[in-house]
Length: 517
Image 1 (cartoon, rainbow, N blue to C red):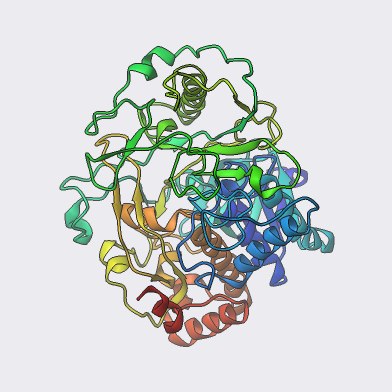
Image 2 (image 1 turned 135 degrees about the vertical axis):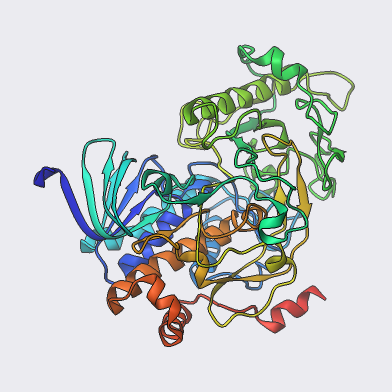
């Protein structure tokens, strides 16, 4: 190992996902020397490089998230409200919603989040506590017993650290280090989950989606050429649901149930119709005094790529990502040429790639949207009953809430939308059973496949990263491993007190929950 090729730090955060950014921020803010490995131009994963506006629970306007997440939401809104020409005429949701989309109370242009994260980390970079390695990704990990000794990067450099945080969207470091992990669906017998299948299948994963930003112009524009796979996707029908993938139908809340959506509602902003265009709209013309063409981020059921799983499947990850990208272009061609119009015609050639929206030249996201990760085998595994009949825990390190949102998976093609209750994340979900210096900092904490469908969303991933970075810093300060902290009630209490100081609630406030009744 060349000394000049080695970088040493106290905490190495592998992956600049949303969780990775918060992990690096929390650890460096605690005074630790941190290296953040960032593969894509924009930091922030699903919030930025993947082009997905926040998926949030319905109490988010009043609480139920860490202080830093609420500060982020306030900052994005303030930036719009202080921009000349913007006027808040939100109609689809409560609160100021810049894009007035209906999937989220905060639909906004991803560039603003990317800029926010750069500003958030800049003081730590300037202080020397944080170093960001851009355009870098892990290639190998070397482990000795219960410790990871170093991580090799694709550019030949090596990272040596006291703690390694897996903040990749796929749990890549778990595999590189040869650690056990969960993936795909567990069998019903493993945790007694009534919604789990009889037989486990690690390949039965949620699909990935390559988001594309589209702008709706006043006049028709050029139609893209039909991609090579267009005929295949045009004829493809979703198993168990019966409808064509390229259509105005999407899977419903129950397996085998479909729902039809209009592509466009009327031009009236007050029209309550839940159309597809306004689903993830991030630029709404009625929110601006000057004339602006609307922009929507296309992350619909119609461009969910479910033919092959992304992880550990028969098709390499890069090929799955390329196929998902082409499916999104097929959807664009269908929208431009064959999608139904309200006047009885076909095609919307006025829809054009918004090449200024996602930091790319073609309007496609920098990174495929990943819903599912390899997950640690932790000291605790949160299962279905833990989120549908939650309990208050003495070792809770945070709170989360989102429906059990399962897109039709890659093998069984079964989707699901199940209600859950506001729940807590116990410390044991963050502590691997087989490694003393690796922590999960993205979608890869100790949860079942079903619960991953609740914890994969933005506020939860933000929290996971923040807790992981804080835990690594606390473990170094206390000279204890996470396993030792977990086993000692006094240490757990001290760590939870630290989280409280940082503005991370560990129990749901009763007054907040009363809003649900």
